[in-house]
Amino acid sequence: MDEKKLLKVGIIGTVIAALCCFTPVLVVLFGVVGLSAFTGYLDLVLFPALGIFVILTVFALWRRRKNQQAGG
Image (cartoon, rainbow, N blue to C red; front, side, top):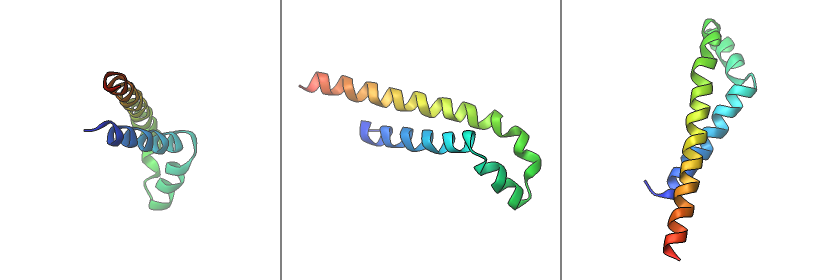
């Protein structure tokens, strides 16, 4: 996967996971749909997902910088 696509996926995933972690978007959505029993488990999924997407973004930036230095 090229750096541009990797960076795009990392940033979009980070923003979505951060929105769901720090705002009650999923809690309200689960309540509307009738899955409010699962809101207690959201932290078990969202915080690791946020961490993975942040690491992916940092990796993409590091890889992009490394390739720019090697190329010129």
